[in-house]
Image (cartoon, rainbow, N blue to C red):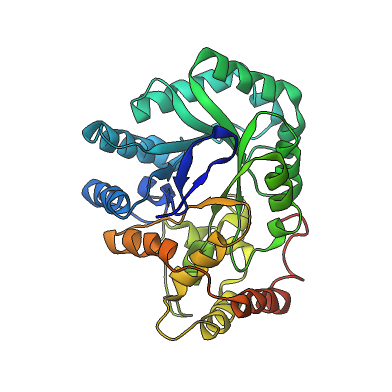
Length: 327
């Protein structure tokens, strides 16, 4: 497994990490034993970066990771969590007193005194430009409750605002073969500033797994069922904001670009890894098989210029006109 520096944290992490939203049961129910098995399979496959959040299963994801790490103290795993979505989404809630409460809760859930990396979890846009917010985050570092901080964003302008701040270590942003806007300005700015890029939703909520059809149905409690129009949270988090049926057509064309025998999901992850400036990509996994398959993308290597050109051609044909201009 290749390792890269995670921005201003200075830590090295595997190019394929593990997103653990699904371990909080927001993608359908996951049994505790299955969740632990996913973590074990990822680590055995070379993964040493976990991404979670305090709202994933109302802390269940953090607690699962914390219990796993308590059982395996020999492991050197970097854990990034997120905070901010447990309150009304108004800028006034992003203050030091709340940060301390949220961080303390995550420290308890994860069973650690100091959190490796804490990210603001897609807060209201003005928060990214508020110096008092960054001063509060710096205070948490000085107090020793967190080592580093970053942001998770929905929009490219939010990413650029955070990158301009001197102590922002990382930016987490949606990046996949159907979501190319970050390539234009965000990744170049991050490279210039030494900020790490954590690429999330790399398979467009499973679209780019190549396993879905128009007849695929998702559980009632799966956000790919209830949030397709953005009724619960930003629609960009579900299928990257693209229409499901149209996305299936694009996946078919993407698959036709691949060498025979190359799995669609691994190729999609390998394409993200190949983008200059990406530190790590964080696909989720609900099974041991998925965790291992995702990790294997790190060994896929470059699939050539033809794939890169094909991705851009598909994006122009299916998505460029319909996506939000700031995504």
